Image (tube, rainbow over all chains, first blue to last red):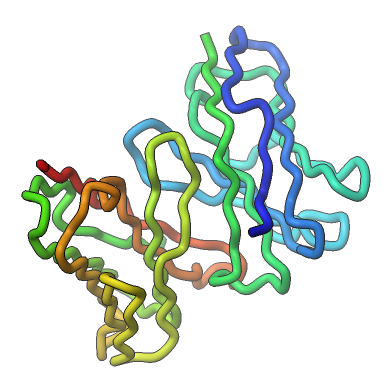
Length: 114
Length: 112
């Protein structure tokens, strides 16, 4: 079964550093997403991306965040100048046609900011 | 904004017991989704519901889309150890059709 692959599985970074979280969506999917889950809390939408541009973003997705599809396979989330409160699981997801029930989530990257 | 409230927050049951959990909202949803999250993994879709009143099964799992479109329940029959995990309800946000809103989850623990 096709999978969404995320790397690394766990990243520890110092406060103020930049991190890039990487995702390889399912190959025929056209819509890409990032979600965040702070430990013990619910999963929260960050951003959706289609046709090489952001289609929706939440209030969480401020200027310290950016997304990019640098090539035909990768989808990245960059967090500039990380803060302690950025510590969370970050999930990438993709869907073929943008319908919410068609999401496939990756296994996540656990980001720890120290 | 839209919120989904799940109850109970956690459940501790014996293997073989049936489980029931539900999800309510103050606003109408046109699609209800139930996900399961295993430790260290991403959410995996269990059941999707598209019409008010719809009752859908997936093996030992059964979910229903409430008539008012403001609630849904998930039942698990004859629980087994691999049912352990966190169950989330979710639905599309009114603010954007591609954006999912999640409940806070129900954590299921099973005593063998």
